[in-house]
Amino acid sequence: MSGAPVKLYVYDLSNGLARQMSMSLTGRQIDGIWHTAVVVYGQEFYFGQGILTSPPGGTHLGQPLEIVDMGETYLPEEVVIEYIESQRSVFTPEKYHLLDFNCNTFSNSLCQFLTGSNIPKHITDLPADFLNTPFGQSMRPMIEGMFGRSQVTPPVAQPGPNADSINMLRDVSSAALSAAPQPAGKPPVLQNAPNAATLKNWLQSYKAVVVFFTSATCPPCRMIKPDFERLVREKNDTDSSRIKLLGVTVDTGVAYDAGAEFGIRATPTFMLFHNNAKFSEFRGANYAELESSVNLLLFTAYPPHPHRKIHQLRGVLDLPNKPVLYNTPGKVDMIYSKLESFLDQDGIKLDEQNKIVLEQSKKAITDPKVAIDMAGWSSLIDLLLEKLPLDHQFPLLDVFRTLLATKAASEYYMNDCSQLVRLIENGYKQENVPKATLLMTLRACNIFAHNMLVTTYFTSTLPAAANSRASLTQLLVSSLLSPESQVRQTAASLAFNCATVVADERLKKEKEDGYLEGMAEQEDDDWQIEIVSAIMDDLSKETDEQVIHRLLGAIAKFVFLAPSQSSVADLLSALEIKSVLDSKKKIISSPTVSTLAKEVLQLVDSSVSGH
Image 1 (cartoon, rainbow, N blue to C red):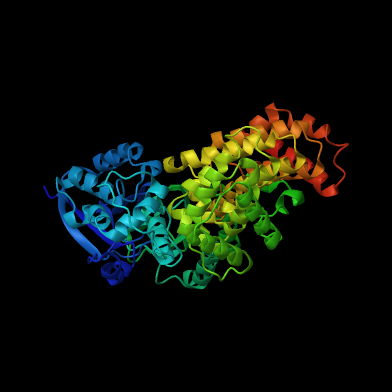
Image 2 (cartoon, rainbow, N blue to C red):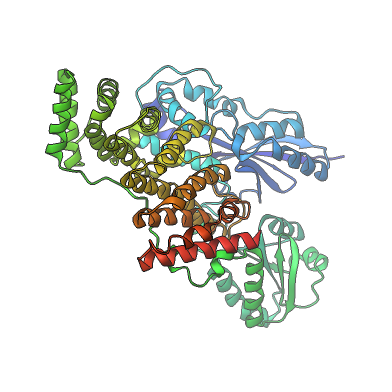
């Protein structure tokens, strides 16, 4: 009995950069950042956002750099598929770790099951080899910030990575985790199937497929072929990294088995498939029927979110998609003069190095081109937070929130955000925080100027981000309860920023997938419920129209395009948001706020009725 061949497809996530740059960066030759997949029974299996499947060589990475023969398996195909399905609860997206539990972990496990062999040692040993270099040790904190603590040998402290290194890590991490093909390397939206096995493989791999059965001696086939190909291309967004509709051409004169198996008696015949099940079929070169059938297939495969069916949502759609930032410097000379007077009052003497850093910060605020020693600045912040009384910290925080919007700050705190967490905790862990200090602490949430920083540490569902996100949430919730209107208004802006991150992920997911199904990357129902509960508590008592406007904006962002699993709309309904907003009619005078309030109720009603 002959077995089925098992192949290991090996890819380089760095696209050759590791080979070129590793010696200068690490002092050691590393030929690639290896990603692997296992090919068996005509399918390629790999681990990223869960266990994924594609036609061999059809992933976002294109063709493999190397194919390793792992031997043969004598297990039947159905047993192999059943085993892989059983591993989905083990290899989940949440468990993915770039160093400890990655695609190569899965490939090695699957190869052991299929053939009893391990994948090449230089692939499985790569994380330890990388971390045993000074460069790897410097990158480790950032990797652990993204994926959680690694179990590989503990690091030795090294200088932080530079911007190019950070960008390379982000590219590698994105490629490793990606569940979808990227634009540069995705398979063509038009394919040919030379046999029944290839056709069935395509049908299993895509949600929506239209198959064009043709033959060389068919004039109507030649006539409609250009229209068929144009229609398939039109239905695929060129900006999206995913194939929405796959078009497959089958020449029945070549693929005899496909023609027989699918019962083709005449050409042209079009068959449409949804999730590998036949959706519809018709014969003849009728373009109008082809277009109508494809539109119906896509509507079924990618149903629009119920909110997209609400015609009047101008207030919601006009909300800005960018966070509220406080990055405009105040009166710089006055701020620094106030800080220096507090230093004198409190008897704080700065050494020469700290004076230089403070002067650098003053220049950097007014001129972004001026470089600042971020390590020195961080040390100065630690020193002054410890020595300055709480009511004397606000000018320092005013300087800090402006610098926080710069690229240098983003790169520095991406490596270690602990100081940001300490600043945030200052705003709620001590009693009777002065208004000026609390306001500047809230404005120091200019972290939202840096999407990668905020989505990694402050809105992420990653375990490594749990403490930093909890601190930000606690500052937000406590500030919404402040008796000071200005504090509540700034807190409402922070709530809006959190909601904007979630909303942005939903819009990206809708564009990528063609529709919304499941949770987007930044979705966490419990976290959203906690924030929305605090928003509703404030809203029920609020008398300031500006604060009401920002709170409504945050609610709208949290509700709009929310997945069916979301509980936010149900919570709002249970908290009687309609009655709360009715009670605000005497306060709301702006048509913009009034329209937004009306549309928020529409969103809630639509979501609740759809559950």
